[in-house]
Image (cartoon, rainbow, N blue to C red; front, side, top):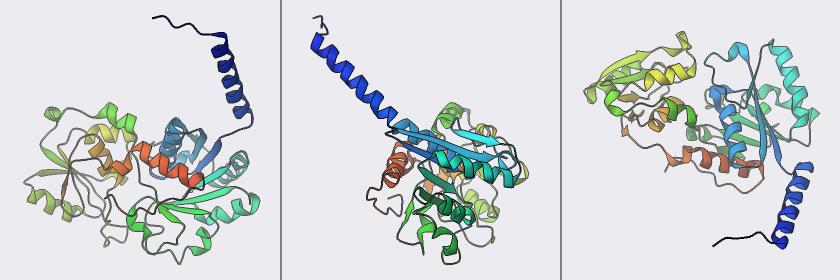
Length: 304
């Protein structure tokens, strides 16, 4: 059967196109500026929000501190001094509806004072806020919403704090994963003051282990993933910078391994094979968009 487009259908199509055009002209979408790109989170969130929703996002970062090259196509890297970088970000912010900071909380008050009607989000990623909520109140009080990247950071947090799970660079991980038969029979561990625990876990599973001291060897992130993809297992246990506190959450490295179908031994010594659904890009984007849109958001506190 051949379907012919009627005059009426054509007119409806034209009306629909006009409505779309009018919506774009009225800027019927959110513009989001991610300020800083700690662990590449800002660039990834910018990518996936724009993919799944009617948003226009940008992440800005400073070249001198982009050691691991974690940016995406939504990231601008500025090669400038710290003071000039901050001024440039401050001026760029005037064109955006939402200012999403990844750290740099001590500067929130400047943006709050200059842009009182914009929504400001502070996104904490670990050490700077762990067990320090009261101390940093003077900074986070200038934000409308607080986000944290791992659920353990919610301990002691105010009511307007929410967990936004980390998501991985799904495209890069897909491109770099290798079949299981091409992997060696060793475990891979990134040193963060917990080699002693990792060695114990490796022994429990009868595994040889290679250790990477990544802070002393800042490879581009794609090269790091290409190396990790050759291993049969990743041991994901880390201590905080106090070298005592064990971090009770899956790290970005662990999540990347799971997405690439590499089993992970977590901080509890458990063998994990499945990528947690809360970390899938569409779930993370939906949750963050609800926060951006002032919808009521459940305060999820773990991966279960």
